Image (cartoon, rainbow, N blue to C red; front, top):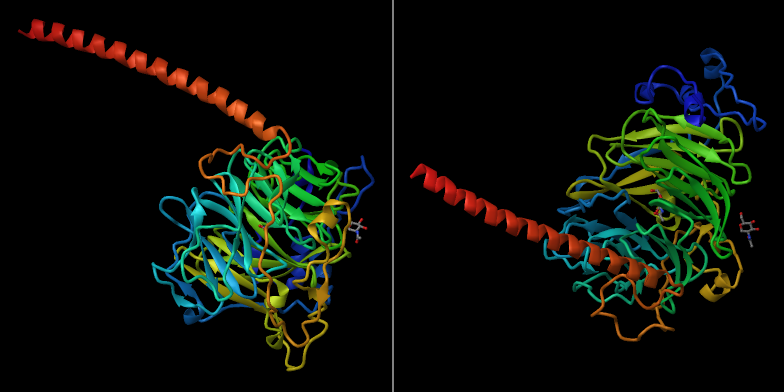
Length: 525
Ligand SMILES: *[C@@H]1O[C@H](CO)[C@@H](O)[C@H](O)[C@H]1NC(C)=O
Ligand SMILES: *[C@@H]1O[C@H](CO)[C@@H](O)[C@H](O)[C@H]1NC(C)=O
């Protein structure tokens, strides 16, 4: 057998069985794939378990622990979406928690001010402008009142939420971005450039929009031959990486429209993968082995031949959603349908991916939101906050580093990405890059006033396109939409012909049946 999945040896017991084990032992389980010169089959030299146990790696995150908030701090009576799509269904920022919900006759999501805990009334207003289920939502990192949504109705919509939340349902987006010819399952804002939004659809295309003008400026429609599972921007937004159903992980320069690195069969199993960029430029992936074991791996885009590390976890079948904190280099893995969150520290020392601990609870998670760093309570040494979606509620889970001191712990809170955009959209499209503008959390984060999102449309009709709800509209610069339109029409013709021929057949058979019935009646009589 070949491929990374089959090369990994590990102790016989499963991750779950190892649960009670010491952290040192756990990082033994998560042992790494040594780098090997290409061509040479890497072999894994497993030290004796005993010697491993004596090596206790120092980490200030060793004792990070998770805790669910009390019942009255949850958001209750929420009908979390049941749509079959592996997105997180929940997006959070320091003001609001947004949750995709079940809605009749279209798609909707809730936007609740963070303090609006307790029972959410059925009549609570929603964001409900899509005509099909909402599949993914993402808060703008540069404006806590702006959120994007992608939907089965093939559109992306960008919404402005009033300062204190919704008092009426919101049906009018600030802008509708049309260009995909199939459902849009992924939306992701650029980390450092204002008003740059990426979307990926089941048409296997990635479109990058200037939301400020409503234009689709980059259309990567010939890079993926199969469904795109996940897209992630790198730290300064110069590159994206994708995981797709063809089992490839690609690193793409979107402005040059070039694939600069790729790995076939990053994980050999057929089930969904995830790929995210880490701050140092490496790519972290989750996926499945051929034997359907869940795996995680670390890759250097400069040499994707072999992974830097490859670990096997267990045989559950929920997709592992990774949530990454670039400040602490911790990755939290939330399996869809699991009831636990496992977390790992990534370092540049073998085995590179170090298991830290597991937060376990009883109820499985339907989805998960992740608070940006600036939304955390630094006075309590909170280093991550999750918003776990149950079937009918959303439960915050707080991750804390146990410390006795009341003073600000600057080693836990290096300056972190603030809400200010480092670039304007035009600058980014012209080729500039910039890291996030950092802020100190020393005195906590005080949300500033957000300016309204202004969309000055170029090249697209001022009035909202309403009559033509097809997916081949207006603002796509390339010919793709037209092409898709033509193809769709051809398909439609084909289907209509088929329906006609079926109808004819049915008519003929009806006639035959009634004739036979008459004959039967005669015979009987
Ligand atoms: C990629 O997957 C991670 C983990 O599920 C998620 O946090 C992120 O939002 C995803 N990105 C996109 C664009 O879907
Ligand atoms: C942005 O990131 C890329 C990839 O890590 C790097 O090569 C480039 O130098 C960075 N640019 C800036 C301006 O930081």
